[in-house]
Image (cartoon, rainbow, N blue to C red; front, top):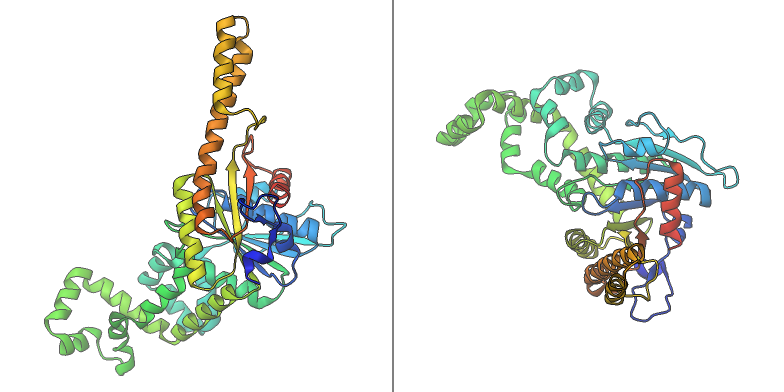
Length: 392
């Protein structure tokens, strides 16, 4: 049975998408990782926190949620003063009956990179790497480093074996696919021609990089120095030489984590809102997961609007409001009907947008979460979201 079918409820209408059974995912002891992914601003962080809380409270699982959200909303909603690169236990949640635990952490990109260096080099070489200007820039600001370090941290948490369930809130990248692409980009970087060129001095008995490059490539070296600058090229060469012994480990761990993401112990949940860009991103990601044979469990469609009286459509509401206005003395009721008409039209548009995903991926289970009247800022709000996802 493929992953979407595993977590689908039966629905009464044959035309409807299968209903996603999130509680089945959270309760399944064979699922050790849930990855929430999607475009930015669709509620990934809140969804990840709500699922982690529900897994601990309702299903008794020792859970850790890893967020990449720099806004620190997760810490605030869980009642923590701060989050850092170390899991912190969330106190005051209702786990007395279930026996579960909830821990939370926020990825510190540079700290994670530093920890990798310390773990895989001796102190002298680590100090050399830390002082290198190129390393200082790469570990803090280079595009793609955050996504790779998120994968690195996930691999670390998984390898420790301390958690029944790891819930990952993927980085707020330009594209959600950056999270999956980071290991491949790293491997391409490590295998690149320029990188091998920069490694050559360290592997040639310590000869000067510039003399080696000049002897080998003549005018090419002058062009490189002119474009990059001699000091930057020197810093880059030193950084690459210092990390040479670590490259195999980087690649190996990236490949191991990628295989874990392909395994049945992982469940990917796409998170989207009923907006064209968000649904388009979710569909693109679903296609990529399918191509990479990664277990897509379903779609969580956030911030869906539902009229209180669905049998009263927008046109009926508009006509009724006009008649009441003509009669006079019914302004308040007419305003309510106009508001209902607006909401009904919005609900129709949202269903049409969501249908683009369902038509492209009819076997993928989905669940819709009604838009909340206020932002989630505490544990009770996360419980409400968790219940809405699990029992729509």
